[in-house]
Every structure is written in C-alpha cells, then in structure tokens.
Image 1 (tube, one colour):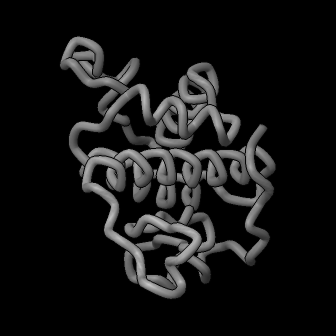
Image 2 (tube, one colour):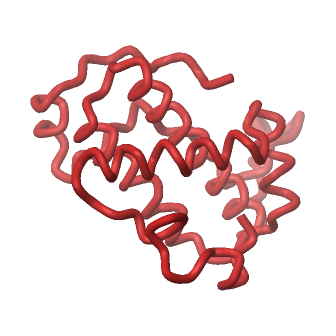
Length: 152
C-alpha cells in the first residue's frame, strides 16, 4: 500500500547535510497552477487557495507514509524517521482547515484510506516514543483532535 522507498542514502550524514533535517526525496510535488491542454501555449491559471491547501495536506500525508514505510523496513533509524515525520506533521498542522471530503478523496486515490491514516498516526507515535518524546495527539493528548473539531 505504501509507496516505494525513495532509495537515497540515509544516516546521520544525510540528516546533517540539510539544516532542518528535512529530506526532499520524500516530498510530493503539488502544483499551484491548473493545467489544461493549452497551458503550454497560453499559460495556466492559479488554483484556488483551498484546492492547493487540500492537495498539500494529501501530499504531506503521502510523504509521511513514505517515511513510515522506510522506517518499518529499517531504511531509516528511529531518529531519522522522527526528524522527517516531525517535518511533515508540522507542515500539516500549519495548513489550517482543509476540506476533509476532498482530502479523503485525494488520499483514497493514492491508496491511503482512513485505516491507513490511523496506522500512520500509530506508527508516528511509536517513532516518537522510541525517541523518548510525546506526540501531543492520540494517546499522548489530553484533548483529542475530534474534540477540538479537527476534520482529518
């Protein structure tokens, strides 16, 4: 179900080579412009901000899925998976409100259903706990995301 490993070298040297520890090989590229048959000729229009936000949410979750898949295969250490996972979770949290139905549709198209999202949350918590940290949601939270009115 998870995407194939990006396949680049990992390790402490890989984390040290990027200031914030983010590894762009896991990134899903999101276009901010609408494409059409004639975009190459007349240019393209920008997508509405809400659409870009929904696609970024899906892209970040797909990227997190790749990170957790590599962690499960032991391509990444606990520490590496935590650094990469933290980066994507921070990006998701920074998006604000998204259209939960549209995001669910985008994710389902990439093989990530509601159960897989729960699995990703559980794996991320496992990585954080392995590194001696709490996640701030799920079992670690005092208020669940549902109680806060979050959609995804």
